[in-house]
Length: 87
Image (cartoon, rainbow, N blue to C red):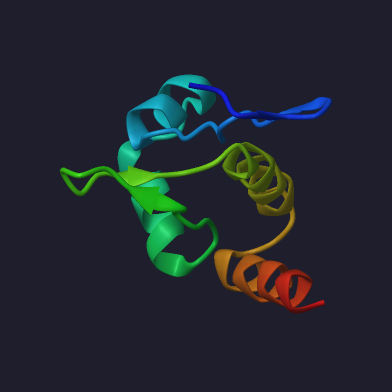
């Protein structure tokens, strides 16, 4: 059921499993897992069975990581993205 108040409709957030991200990006499950472990991307929730769930922002973040990988090491990317989050 979608909740509505006055002129606004509350749309539930879209969540993606690792398999969805693999399918849409072409990255491997291991890469997604590694990026999560490194703190480059973050899960927003888990399914009752314990599967990680990510929101839409993960796709923007993965795109940014891919851009940075063209000219930086993974250690530099971790520092750059960590700095951007704290700003």
